[in-house]
Image: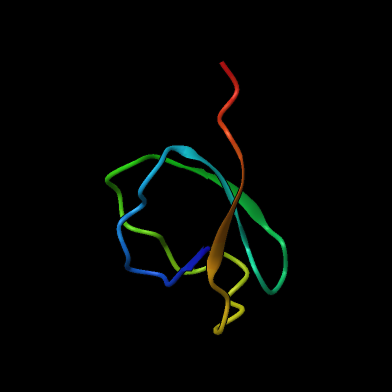
Length: 52
């Protein structure tokens, strides 16, 4: 499942931009940011759980 910037993060974890694959740790309840690489059309996809 992928998410648009501005949507609420459903689960804490590592997500990456579907365009440039830039990973970012995001926390549940925050909003998905725009990609820091300014891809413009990227969405966010969860790739792993956070490290304990």
